Amino acid sequence: MRFTIVKNISKALLCGTVLLGPVGCSDFLDEQPPSNLTTESFYTIPDHAEAALASVYAEVRFFGGGAGIFSSNWQLLEAMTGTSTTETAQNSDLNNLYSLSHDGNTVHVVNWWNGLYRVIAQANLVLDRVPAITPMPEAQKKKILGEARFLRAWAYFTLVRLWGDVPLITKPQADATASDFRPARNNQEEVYKLIVEDLQAAESAGLAWMDVSGRVNLAAVKTQLAKVYLTMAGFPLSKGASHYKLAADKALEVITYATSKPAEINLFSTYEDVHREQTENRLEHLFMIQYNTIVPGVNVSGVDIPGGSNPMDNFYGNFKPINFNGPTGTGSSIPTLDFYNSFETGDRRTKDQEGYFYTTYFTNGTGARFDLGRPYVFKHFNRTSNGTEGVAGTRQNNLNVPLIRYAETLLIFAEAQNEVGGPTQATYDALKRIRDRAQLTTPALGTYTQANFREAVWRERWWEFCYEQITWFDMVRTRKVFNEKTKGFDNFVGHVNLNTNKVLEQKHLLLPLGVQEMLNNPNLRPQNPGYPGV
Image 1 (cartoon, rainbow, N blue to C red):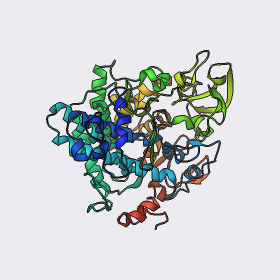
Image 2: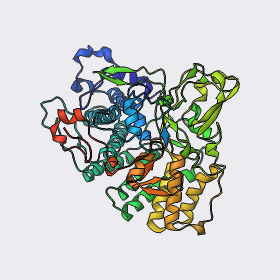
Image 3: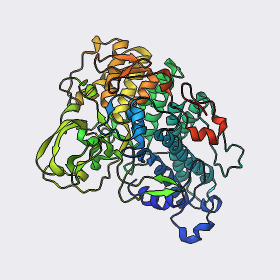
Image 4: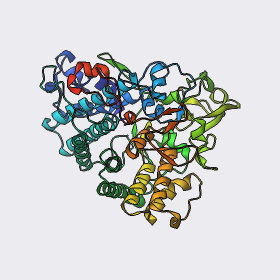
Protein backbone atom coordinates (compact mmCIF):
# COMPACT_ATOMS: atom_id res chain seq x y z
CA MET A 1 0.00 0.00 0.00
CA ARG A 2 3.00 2.27 0.25
CA PHE A 3 2.57 2.92 -3.49
CA THR A 4 -0.77 1.56 -4.54
CA ILE A 5 -2.87 3.09 -1.79
CA VAL A 6 -0.95 5.77 0.06
CA LYS A 7 -0.03 7.75 -3.04
CA ASN A 8 -3.76 8.23 -3.73
CA ILE A 9 -5.05 8.83 -0.23
CA SER A 10 -4.22 12.51 0.12
CA LYS A 11 -6.16 13.20 -3.09
CA ALA A 12 -8.96 10.82 -2.20
CA LEU A 13 -9.46 12.56 1.13
CA LEU A 14 -10.08 15.90 -0.55
CA CYS A 15 -13.62 14.68 -1.17
CA GLY A 16 -14.40 12.98 2.13
CA THR A 17 -17.53 12.03 3.96
CA VAL A 18 -19.15 12.36 7.31
CA LEU A 19 -21.35 9.57 8.61
CA LEU A 20 -23.31 8.03 5.75
CA GLY A 21 -22.58 10.86 3.32
CA PRO A 22 -21.34 10.49 -0.29
CA VAL A 23 -17.74 10.87 -1.38
CA GLY A 24 -15.90 11.15 -4.65
CA CYS A 25 -12.39 12.12 -5.73
CA SER A 26 -9.90 11.51 -8.50
CA ASP A 27 -6.31 11.49 -9.61
CA PHE A 28 -7.58 13.57 -12.52
CA LEU A 29 -9.17 16.53 -10.77
CA ASP A 30 -8.17 18.76 -13.64
CA GLU A 31 -10.70 17.07 -15.91
CA GLN A 32 -13.41 19.34 -14.55
CA PRO A 33 -13.76 21.86 -11.72
CA PRO A 34 -13.93 20.04 -8.35
CA SER A 35 -17.15 21.89 -7.54
CA ASN A 36 -18.78 20.07 -10.46
CA LEU A 37 -17.76 16.59 -9.35
CA THR A 38 -20.62 14.36 -8.27
CA THR A 39 -20.80 10.67 -7.49
CA GLU A 40 -22.32 10.23 -10.95
CA SER A 41 -19.60 12.10 -12.86
CA PHE A 42 -16.77 10.79 -10.73
CA TYR A 43 -17.19 7.02 -11.02
CA THR A 44 -16.44 6.78 -14.72
CA ILE A 45 -12.95 5.29 -15.19
CA PRO A 46 -10.89 2.58 -13.44
CA ASP A 47 -8.64 5.15 -11.74
CA HIS A 48 -11.71 6.59 -10.05
CA ALA A 49 -12.47 3.16 -8.61
CA GLU A 50 -8.93 2.84 -7.27
CA ALA A 51 -9.08 6.31 -5.68
CA ALA A 52 -12.47 5.58 -4.13
CA LEU A 53 -11.14 2.34 -2.66
CA ALA A 54 -8.14 4.25 -1.28
CA SER A 55 -10.57 6.45 0.63
CA VAL A 56 -12.10 3.37 2.28
CA TYR A 57 -8.66 2.30 3.47
CA ALA A 58 -8.01 5.86 4.66
CA GLU A 59 -11.16 5.89 6.78
CA VAL A 60 -9.95 2.82 8.68
CA ARG A 61 -7.31 5.06 10.20
CA PHE A 62 -9.95 6.60 12.49
CA PHE A 63 -8.62 3.78 14.70
CA GLY A 64 -5.69 6.01 15.64
CA GLY A 65 -7.57 9.29 15.78
CA GLY A 66 -7.47 11.59 18.77
CA ALA A 67 -9.87 11.09 21.66
CA GLY A 68 -9.09 14.12 23.77
CA ILE A 69 -5.94 14.95 25.68
CA PHE A 70 -3.37 12.12 25.88
CA SER A 71 -5.68 9.56 24.29
CA SER A 72 -6.44 7.81 21.01
CA ASN A 73 -9.50 5.93 19.79
CA TRP A 74 -7.80 2.52 19.99
CA GLN A 75 -7.58 2.80 23.78
CA LEU A 76 -11.27 1.96 24.00
CA LEU A 77 -10.35 -1.68 23.37
CA GLU A 78 -7.54 -1.73 25.93
CA ALA A 79 -8.72 0.24 28.95
CA MET A 80 -11.68 -2.02 29.75
CA THR A 81 -9.69 -5.26 29.69
CA GLY A 82 -7.87 -4.68 32.96
CA THR A 83 -4.47 -5.43 31.40
CA SER A 84 -3.47 -1.77 31.25
CA THR A 85 -3.56 1.28 33.48
CA THR A 86 -2.46 4.91 33.23
CA GLU A 87 0.29 7.12 34.61
CA THR A 88 -1.37 10.41 33.67
CA ALA A 89 -5.10 10.09 34.40
CA GLN A 90 -5.70 13.47 32.72
CA ASN A 91 -8.33 12.32 30.22
CA SER A 92 -11.67 11.94 31.98
CA ASP A 93 -13.20 9.88 29.16
CA LEU A 94 -10.28 7.45 29.21
CA ASN A 95 -10.47 7.31 33.01
CA ASN A 96 -14.14 6.38 32.72
CA LEU A 97 -13.18 3.45 30.47
CA TYR A 98 -10.58 2.25 32.97
CA SER A 99 -13.13 2.50 35.78
CA LEU A 100 -15.92 0.92 33.70
CA SER A 101 -18.08 4.01 34.21
CA HIS A 102 -18.31 5.04 30.56
CA ASP A 103 -21.61 6.10 29.03
CA GLY A 104 -23.11 7.39 25.79
CA ASN A 105 -21.17 10.65 26.03
CA THR A 106 -17.72 9.04 26.30
CA VAL A 107 -15.74 10.37 23.35
CA HIS A 108 -14.10 7.03 22.47
CA VAL A 109 -17.53 5.38 22.24
CA VAL A 110 -18.82 8.13 19.97
CA ASN A 111 -15.71 8.12 17.79
CA TRP A 112 -15.80 4.36 17.20
CA TRP A 113 -19.45 4.40 16.14
CA ASN A 114 -18.90 7.33 13.76
CA GLY A 115 -15.59 6.00 12.46
CA LEU A 116 -16.93 2.55 11.65
CA TYR A 117 -19.96 3.93 9.85
CA ARG A 118 -17.71 6.23 7.80
CA VAL A 119 -15.81 3.12 6.65
CA ILE A 120 -19.14 1.53 5.74
CA ALA A 121 -20.34 4.66 3.93
CA GLN A 122 -17.22 4.78 1.78
CA ALA A 123 -17.36 1.04 1.07
CA ASN A 124 -21.03 1.28 0.11
CA LEU A 125 -20.20 3.94 -2.49
CA VAL A 126 -17.52 1.74 -4.02
CA LEU A 127 -19.83 -1.27 -4.08
CA ASP A 128 -22.69 0.75 -5.56
CA ARG A 129 -20.86 2.77 -8.21
CA VAL A 130 -17.86 0.74 -9.36
CA PRO A 131 -19.84 -2.09 -11.05
CA ALA A 132 -21.14 0.35 -13.69
CA ILE A 133 -17.70 1.68 -14.70
CA THR A 134 -17.06 0.77 -18.34
CA PRO A 135 -14.65 -0.05 -19.81
CA MET A 136 -12.79 -1.60 -16.90
CA PRO A 137 -10.94 -4.93 -16.70
CA GLU A 138 -13.23 -7.41 -14.97
CA ALA A 139 -10.44 -8.81 -12.80
CA GLN A 140 -9.56 -5.33 -11.51
CA LYS A 141 -13.19 -4.55 -10.81
CA LYS A 142 -13.77 -7.82 -8.97
CA LYS A 143 -10.68 -7.31 -6.85
CA ILE A 144 -11.67 -3.76 -5.86
CA LEU A 145 -15.16 -4.89 -4.93
CA GLY A 146 -13.72 -7.77 -2.90
CA GLU A 147 -11.45 -5.44 -0.96
CA ALA A 148 -14.33 -3.06 -0.25
CA ARG A 149 -16.48 -5.93 1.01
CA PHE A 150 -13.70 -7.10 3.32
CA LEU A 151 -13.38 -3.61 4.79
CA ARG A 152 -17.15 -3.29 5.21
CA ALA A 153 -17.23 -6.70 6.88
CA TRP A 154 -14.44 -5.62 9.24
CA ALA A 155 -16.43 -2.53 10.21
CA TYR A 156 -19.68 -4.42 10.79
CA PHE A 157 -17.89 -7.21 12.67
CA THR A 158 -16.48 -4.59 15.03
CA LEU A 159 -19.82 -2.83 15.38
CA VAL A 160 -21.84 -5.94 16.17
CA ARG A 161 -19.38 -7.10 18.81
CA LEU A 162 -19.32 -3.70 20.51
CA TRP A 163 -23.00 -2.73 20.33
CA GLY A 164 -24.99 -5.86 19.47
CA ASP A 165 -27.95 -4.94 17.27
CA VAL A 166 -26.88 -2.16 14.87
CA PRO A 167 -28.33 -0.62 11.70
CA LEU A 168 -27.48 -2.45 8.48
CA ILE A 169 -26.80 0.11 5.78
CA THR A 170 -25.71 -1.37 2.46
CA LYS A 171 -26.45 1.44 -0.01
CA PRO A 172 -25.25 5.04 -0.21
CA GLN A 173 -27.48 7.57 1.52
CA ALA A 174 -27.67 10.76 -0.49
CA ASP A 175 -29.28 13.18 1.97
CA ALA A 176 -31.49 13.52 5.01
CA THR A 177 -34.63 13.06 2.92
CA ALA A 178 -33.74 9.44 2.14
CA SER A 179 -36.24 6.96 3.55
CA ASP A 180 -33.53 5.05 5.40
CA PHE A 181 -31.59 8.05 6.67
CA ARG A 182 -32.64 7.27 10.25
CA PRO A 183 -32.48 3.48 10.26
CA ALA A 184 -33.56 1.18 13.05
CA ARG A 185 -31.25 -1.47 14.45
CA ASN A 186 -31.06 -4.91 12.85
CA ASN A 187 -30.67 -7.99 14.99
CA GLN A 188 -27.24 -9.57 15.28
CA GLU A 189 -28.14 -12.59 13.15
CA GLU A 190 -28.82 -10.30 10.19
CA VAL A 191 -25.59 -8.40 10.75
CA TYR A 192 -23.53 -11.58 10.89
CA LYS A 193 -25.24 -12.85 7.74
CA LEU A 194 -23.98 -9.80 5.84
CA ILE A 195 -20.50 -10.11 7.36
CA VAL A 196 -20.20 -13.71 6.19
CA GLU A 197 -21.56 -12.87 2.74
CA ASP A 198 -19.10 -10.00 2.35
CA LEU A 199 -16.14 -12.12 3.39
CA GLN A 200 -17.17 -14.98 1.14
CA ALA A 201 -17.41 -12.53 -1.77
CA ALA A 202 -13.96 -11.19 -0.92
CA GLU A 203 -12.68 -14.76 -0.75
CA SER A 204 -13.72 -15.33 -4.37
CA ALA A 205 -12.48 -11.97 -5.66
CA GLY A 206 -9.21 -13.24 -7.09
CA LEU A 207 -7.01 -11.75 -4.36
CA ALA A 208 -3.40 -12.88 -3.96
CA TRP A 209 -2.59 -14.93 -0.87
CA MET A 210 -0.34 -12.13 0.37
CA ASP A 211 0.14 -8.55 -0.79
CA VAL A 212 3.23 -6.64 0.35
CA SER A 213 1.55 -3.37 -0.67
CA GLY A 214 -0.74 -3.77 2.32
CA ARG A 215 -3.97 -4.27 0.42
CA VAL A 216 -6.43 -6.95 1.48
CA ASN A 217 -5.20 -10.44 0.67
CA LEU A 218 -6.65 -13.94 0.68
CA ALA A 219 -4.87 -15.06 3.86
CA ALA A 220 -6.40 -12.11 5.72
CA VAL A 221 -9.87 -12.79 4.33
CA LYS A 222 -9.82 -16.46 5.29
CA THR A 223 -8.44 -15.76 8.76
CA GLN A 224 -11.03 -13.05 9.33
CA LEU A 225 -13.78 -15.44 8.23
CA ALA A 226 -12.42 -18.06 10.63
CA LYS A 227 -12.51 -15.45 13.41
CA VAL A 228 -16.10 -14.56 12.54
CA TYR A 229 -17.14 -18.23 12.70
CA LEU A 230 -15.30 -18.66 16.00
CA THR A 231 -17.13 -15.65 17.42
CA MET A 232 -20.51 -16.91 16.16
CA ALA A 233 -19.82 -20.25 17.84
CA GLY A 234 -19.47 -18.44 21.17
CA PHE A 235 -21.54 -15.75 22.83
CA PRO A 236 -23.97 -14.24 22.17
CA LEU A 237 -25.11 -16.33 19.16
CA SER A 238 -23.90 -19.63 20.69
CA LYS A 239 -23.97 -21.57 17.42
CA GLY A 240 -21.58 -24.11 18.88
CA ALA A 241 -20.10 -27.14 17.14
CA SER A 242 -21.14 -26.32 13.55
CA HIS A 243 -19.38 -22.97 13.63
CA TYR A 244 -16.37 -24.20 15.55
CA LYS A 245 -15.89 -26.62 12.66
CA LEU A 246 -16.32 -23.85 10.10
CA ALA A 247 -13.72 -21.79 11.96
CA ALA A 248 -11.26 -24.67 12.22
CA ASP A 249 -11.63 -25.64 8.57
CA LYS A 250 -11.19 -22.08 7.33
CA ALA A 251 -8.11 -21.46 9.49
CA LEU A 252 -6.69 -24.78 8.34
CA GLU A 253 -6.87 -23.58 4.72
CA VAL A 254 -4.43 -20.81 5.59
CA ILE A 255 -2.23 -23.13 7.66
CA THR A 256 -2.10 -25.65 4.82
CA TYR A 257 -1.04 -22.97 2.36
CA ALA A 258 1.52 -21.60 4.82
CA THR A 259 2.98 -25.06 5.35
CA SER A 260 3.53 -25.37 1.60
CA LYS A 261 4.86 -21.78 1.28
CA PRO A 262 6.71 -21.05 4.55
CA ALA A 263 8.66 -18.21 2.97
CA GLU A 264 5.37 -16.46 2.19
CA ILE A 265 3.29 -17.05 5.36
CA ASN A 266 4.85 -18.02 8.67
CA LEU A 267 5.65 -16.85 12.17
CA PHE A 268 8.46 -14.36 12.52
CA SER A 269 11.52 -15.90 14.11
CA THR A 270 11.89 -12.94 16.49
CA TYR A 271 9.40 -10.69 18.27
CA GLU A 272 11.37 -7.69 17.04
CA ASP A 273 10.03 -8.43 13.56
CA VAL A 274 6.47 -7.86 14.80
CA HIS A 275 7.27 -4.14 15.03
CA ARG A 276 9.86 -3.44 12.35
CA GLU A 277 9.13 -1.27 9.33
CA GLN A 278 11.07 -3.68 7.12
CA THR A 279 8.71 -6.59 7.86
CA GLU A 280 5.39 -4.82 7.39
CA ASN A 281 2.77 -6.65 5.30
CA ARG A 282 5.01 -9.71 5.17
CA LEU A 283 5.11 -13.28 6.48
CA GLU A 284 3.22 -13.09 9.80
CA HIS A 285 1.49 -9.77 9.17
CA LEU A 286 -1.58 -10.82 7.20
CA PHE A 287 -3.31 -7.45 7.45
CA MET A 288 -2.31 -4.10 8.93
CA ILE A 289 -3.59 -0.54 9.09
CA GLN A 290 -1.13 1.34 6.90
CA TYR A 291 0.73 4.40 8.17
CA ASN A 292 3.22 6.64 6.43
CA THR A 293 4.21 10.14 7.47
CA ILE A 294 4.02 11.44 3.90
CA VAL A 295 0.21 11.24 4.18
CA PRO A 296 -1.13 14.41 5.84
CA GLY A 297 -4.00 14.52 8.26
CA VAL A 298 -7.10 16.37 7.13
CA ASN A 299 -10.34 17.72 8.53
CA VAL A 300 -13.38 16.73 6.50
CA SER A 301 -16.67 18.40 7.44
CA GLY A 302 -15.49 18.82 11.01
CA VAL A 303 -14.16 15.27 11.27
CA ASP A 304 -10.45 14.80 11.95
CA ILE A 305 -8.96 12.00 9.86
CA PRO A 306 -5.48 11.19 11.19
CA GLY A 307 -2.44 11.53 9.01
CA GLY A 308 0.25 9.03 8.36
CA SER A 309 2.21 8.74 11.60
CA ASN A 310 1.79 5.59 13.70
CA PRO A 311 -0.80 6.32 16.43
CA MET A 312 0.41 4.02 19.22
CA ASP A 313 2.64 6.51 21.03
CA ASN A 314 0.26 6.62 24.01
CA PHE A 315 2.05 3.42 25.03
CA TYR A 316 5.16 5.49 25.74
CA GLY A 317 5.90 5.95 29.44
CA ASN A 318 5.19 9.27 31.10
CA PHE A 319 8.03 11.69 30.17
CA LYS A 320 10.75 9.10 29.63
CA PRO A 321 13.77 10.15 27.50
CA ILE A 322 13.37 7.28 25.06
CA ASN A 323 13.79 9.13 21.77
CA PHE A 324 15.08 12.21 20.01
CA ASN A 325 12.55 14.40 21.84
CA GLY A 326 14.14 13.65 25.20
CA PRO A 327 11.56 13.25 27.98
CA THR A 328 8.43 12.35 26.02
CA GLY A 329 5.29 10.27 26.10
CA THR A 330 2.13 10.40 28.16
CA GLY A 331 1.92 7.01 29.85
CA SER A 332 -1.83 6.98 29.26
CA SER A 333 -1.70 3.23 28.53
CA ILE A 334 0.84 1.13 30.37
CA PRO A 335 0.83 -2.56 31.34
CA THR A 336 -0.46 -3.48 34.75
CA LEU A 337 2.19 -5.20 36.83
CA ASP A 338 -0.24 -8.01 37.62
CA PHE A 339 -0.60 -8.82 33.93
CA TYR A 340 3.11 -8.50 33.21
CA ASN A 341 3.89 -10.84 36.11
CA SER A 342 1.31 -13.39 34.94
CA PHE A 343 3.56 -14.63 32.11
CA GLU A 344 5.35 -17.92 32.72
CA THR A 345 8.89 -17.74 34.04
CA GLY A 346 11.33 -17.44 31.16
CA ASP A 347 8.73 -16.35 28.60
CA ARG A 348 10.70 -14.61 25.88
CA ARG A 349 7.81 -12.19 25.38
CA THR A 350 8.67 -10.51 28.69
CA LYS A 351 12.39 -10.16 28.00
CA ASP A 352 13.56 -6.55 27.96
CA GLN A 353 13.65 -5.10 24.42
CA GLU A 354 13.36 -8.57 22.94
CA GLY A 355 9.72 -9.44 23.52
CA TYR A 356 6.59 -7.37 23.92
CA PHE A 357 7.83 -5.25 26.84
CA TYR A 358 10.82 -3.14 27.74
CA THR A 359 12.20 -2.11 31.13
CA THR A 360 15.24 -0.16 29.88
CA TYR A 361 16.04 2.03 26.93
CA PHE A 362 18.74 4.37 25.62
CA THR A 363 18.82 7.99 26.74
CA ASN A 364 17.29 10.22 24.06
CA GLY A 365 17.01 7.13 21.89
CA THR A 366 20.72 6.59 21.21
CA GLY A 367 22.70 7.19 24.41
CA ALA A 368 23.41 5.26 27.58
CA ARG A 369 21.00 2.58 28.71
CA PHE A 370 18.78 3.64 31.62
CA ASP A 371 16.16 1.90 33.75
CA LEU A 372 12.57 2.83 32.99
CA GLY A 373 11.47 1.87 36.48
CA ARG A 374 8.78 -0.54 35.31
CA PRO A 375 7.75 -2.46 32.19
CA TYR A 376 6.18 -0.63 29.25
CA VAL A 377 4.71 -1.92 25.99
CA PHE A 378 7.41 -2.56 23.38
CA LYS A 379 5.17 -4.32 20.87
CA HIS A 380 4.47 -1.10 18.92
CA PHE A 381 7.81 0.62 19.57
CA ASN A 382 9.64 1.70 16.42
CA ARG A 383 13.43 1.63 16.77
CA THR A 384 13.81 2.94 13.24
CA SER A 385 12.10 6.23 14.07
CA ASN A 386 13.02 6.54 17.77
CA GLY A 387 16.64 5.50 17.46
CA THR A 388 18.50 2.73 19.24
CA GLU A 389 21.87 2.36 20.91
CA GLY A 390 24.35 4.42 18.90
CA VAL A 391 21.99 4.75 15.92
CA ALA A 392 19.96 7.90 15.33
CA GLY A 393 16.31 7.52 14.50
CA THR A 394 14.61 8.78 11.36
CA ARG A 395 12.02 10.70 13.41
CA GLN A 396 9.41 9.37 10.96
CA ASN A 397 7.21 6.73 12.56
CA ASN A 398 5.93 4.80 9.56
CA LEU A 399 5.14 1.66 11.54
CA ASN A 400 1.84 0.01 10.63
CA VAL A 401 -0.67 -1.27 13.19
CA PRO A 402 -1.27 -5.04 13.02
CA LEU A 403 -4.86 -6.25 12.76
CA ILE A 404 -4.39 -9.90 11.74
CA ARG A 405 -1.27 -11.98 12.36
CA TYR A 406 -0.62 -15.57 11.37
CA ALA A 407 -0.16 -16.34 15.07
CA GLU A 408 -3.88 -15.74 15.43
CA THR A 409 -4.67 -18.09 12.54
CA LEU A 410 -2.83 -20.84 14.42
CA LEU A 411 -4.61 -20.21 17.71
CA ILE A 412 -8.03 -19.88 16.06
CA PHE A 413 -7.48 -23.32 14.58
CA ALA A 414 -6.25 -24.78 17.88
CA GLU A 415 -9.23 -23.44 19.83
CA ALA A 416 -11.90 -24.26 17.27
CA GLN A 417 -10.67 -27.76 16.43
CA ASN A 418 -10.39 -28.59 20.12
CA GLU A 419 -14.07 -27.66 20.54
CA VAL A 420 -14.96 -30.02 17.69
CA GLY A 421 -13.29 -33.12 19.11
CA GLY A 422 -10.78 -32.36 21.83
CA PRO A 423 -7.02 -31.90 21.49
CA THR A 424 -5.33 -33.56 18.52
CA GLN A 425 -1.79 -33.61 17.25
CA ALA A 426 -2.68 -30.80 14.83
CA THR A 427 -4.17 -28.55 17.52
CA TYR A 428 -1.24 -29.33 19.82
CA ASP A 429 1.26 -28.45 17.09
CA ALA A 430 -0.46 -25.12 16.45
CA LEU A 431 -0.34 -24.21 20.15
CA LYS A 432 3.22 -25.46 20.50
CA ARG A 433 4.47 -23.22 17.68
CA ILE A 434 3.39 -20.17 19.66
CA ARG A 435 5.01 -21.46 22.83
CA ASP A 436 8.18 -22.59 21.06
CA ARG A 437 8.80 -19.05 19.87
CA ALA A 438 8.34 -17.87 23.46
CA GLN A 439 10.97 -20.47 24.46
CA LEU A 440 8.50 -22.25 26.73
CA THR A 441 8.14 -25.98 27.30
CA THR A 442 4.74 -27.32 26.29
CA PRO A 443 3.35 -30.27 28.29
CA ALA A 444 2.89 -33.49 26.33
CA LEU A 445 -0.26 -33.89 24.24
CA GLY A 446 -1.47 -36.70 26.50
CA THR A 447 -1.67 -34.37 29.50
CA TYR A 448 -4.41 -32.28 27.91
CA THR A 449 -8.14 -32.71 28.15
CA GLN A 450 -10.56 -30.68 26.06
CA ALA A 451 -11.16 -28.38 29.04
CA ASN A 452 -7.57 -27.67 30.03
CA PHE A 453 -6.46 -27.39 26.40
CA ARG A 454 -9.17 -24.78 25.88
CA GLU A 455 -7.79 -22.70 28.72
CA ALA A 456 -4.22 -23.24 27.53
CA VAL A 457 -5.15 -21.69 24.18
CA TRP A 458 -7.01 -18.83 25.86
CA ARG A 459 -3.97 -18.05 28.00
CA GLU A 460 -1.73 -17.95 24.95
CA ARG A 461 -4.19 -15.59 23.27
CA TRP A 462 -4.07 -13.31 26.31
CA TRP A 463 -0.28 -13.25 26.28
CA GLU A 464 0.40 -13.35 22.56
CA PHE A 465 -2.16 -10.71 21.50
CA CYS A 466 -1.90 -8.37 24.47
CA TYR A 467 -2.18 -4.71 23.46
CA GLU A 468 -3.35 -5.53 19.93
CA GLN A 469 -6.98 -4.61 20.63
CA ILE A 470 -8.07 -8.26 20.55
CA THR A 471 -8.41 -9.18 24.23
CA TRP A 472 -11.69 -7.35 24.85
CA PHE A 473 -13.39 -9.27 22.06
CA ASP A 474 -12.12 -12.56 23.52
CA MET A 475 -13.65 -11.59 26.86
CA VAL A 476 -17.04 -10.90 25.26
CA ARG A 477 -17.24 -14.02 23.06
CA THR A 478 -16.07 -16.44 25.78
CA ARG A 479 -17.69 -14.64 28.72
CA LYS A 480 -14.43 -15.41 30.53
CA VAL A 481 -11.61 -13.22 31.81
CA PHE A 482 -8.04 -14.24 32.61
CA ASN A 483 -7.28 -14.03 36.33
CA GLU A 484 -3.68 -12.85 36.67
CA LYS A 485 -3.39 -14.25 40.19
CA THR A 486 -4.81 -17.76 39.74
CA LYS A 487 -3.83 -18.08 36.03
CA GLY A 488 -7.32 -19.49 35.50
CA PHE A 489 -10.43 -17.88 34.06
CA ASP A 490 -13.22 -16.08 35.89
CA ASN A 491 -16.74 -15.56 34.61
CA PHE A 492 -16.99 -12.20 32.86
CA VAL A 493 -19.77 -10.99 35.12
CA GLY A 494 -18.25 -10.58 38.56
CA HIS A 495 -14.60 -10.50 37.50
CA VAL A 496 -12.63 -7.76 39.24
CA ASN A 497 -10.25 -5.67 37.13
CA LEU A 498 -7.28 -5.50 39.48
CA ASN A 499 -5.99 -2.19 38.14
CA THR A 500 -9.10 -0.37 39.42
CA ASN A 501 -10.83 -2.98 41.61
CA LYS A 502 -13.93 -2.46 39.46
CA VAL A 503 -16.29 -5.34 38.82
CA LEU A 504 -17.42 -6.27 35.32
CA GLU A 505 -21.21 -6.25 35.06
CA GLN A 506 -23.67 -7.71 32.56
CA LYS A 507 -24.10 -4.30 30.93
CA HIS A 508 -20.40 -4.13 30.07
CA LEU A 509 -20.80 -6.87 27.47
CA LEU A 510 -22.07 -4.11 25.16
CA LEU A 511 -21.23 -0.44 24.79
CA PRO A 512 -23.86 2.25 25.22
CA LEU A 513 -25.17 3.97 22.12
CA GLY A 514 -24.06 7.57 21.80
CA VAL A 515 -26.50 10.01 23.36
CA GLN A 516 -26.31 12.48 20.48
CA GLU A 517 -26.74 9.67 17.98
CA MET A 518 -29.99 8.60 19.64
CA LEU A 519 -31.20 12.21 19.77
CA ASN A 520 -30.51 12.52 16.04
CA ASN A 521 -32.11 9.17 15.30
CA PRO A 522 -34.84 8.08 17.74
CA ASN A 523 -35.17 4.83 15.76
CA LEU A 524 -32.01 3.57 17.47
CA ARG A 525 -33.78 3.42 20.83
CA PRO A 526 -33.94 1.81 23.30
CA GLN A 527 -30.48 2.30 24.80
CA ASN A 528 -28.48 -0.87 25.49
CA PRO A 529 -29.40 -2.37 28.90
CA GLY A 530 -27.88 -0.81 31.99
CA TYR A 531 -26.99 2.58 30.49
CA PRO A 532 -28.89 5.88 30.79
CA GLY A 533 -31.29 6.45 27.93
CA VAL A 534 -32.47 9.67 26.27
